[in-house]
Image (cartoon, rainbow, N blue to C red; front, top):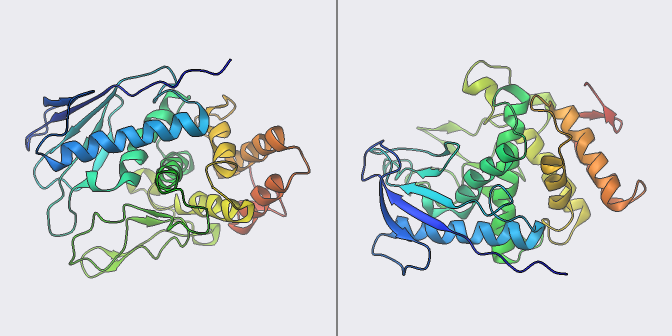
Length: 300
């Protein structure tokens, strides 16, 4: 018997330029749009992401059990970020010079919500390679949400995270590119996008929890290569493999890239069979980015 479709339970609050959470409730489920663009963007973006997770993977909200979707907008003054704090999604307005409002990108909204999905599925330590995987998973399902919304096939999509949130003065198209890590921006103020696409460019650093936003380019690109090789709508097969990997209960919190690659191969084989083209595509993708050597784990 088919499950009836659930509906989201959204509450949007306004921090009014403070860093005090949750802020004042300004829109709840079943209420009409308000005059505040950021409120409506957050409300609509959470709805799109909720629909994506249900229709693609039959997941009912962040925890799979209908968890209310709470978000706060207008966080801080000139706040150049968005984040998931373990309970809600929080969005800054940007400083206006480099960033405009972070609710203006569905990929950013879905990225933050996906941190909650990863956390509720067992989590990945936010440090080093497991932290980079944590970031990458949010990027992957961020772009898949946008592709689902636009009904784009893998070869039609931009594969960009955060397109549209840079100000007009910035020389760049997005925060990150899964298709071509390292090419999202090259700006006088921001510098050049530092993401590597393969292990040959892996960055060893103590900054950013061990480079979680930098080295995520490697698993990001692996997913892109797998999705392109499989073809069609990326959320249907490549995305399903990644979803099964994240939510299947076999992924340790300290997983490195090689362990994650192995788990995606196991998920692909379980879903499609050992000899399926999906398995071959996933193996080739991880080999191409240097995580697997000749289709086998380079390290464990």
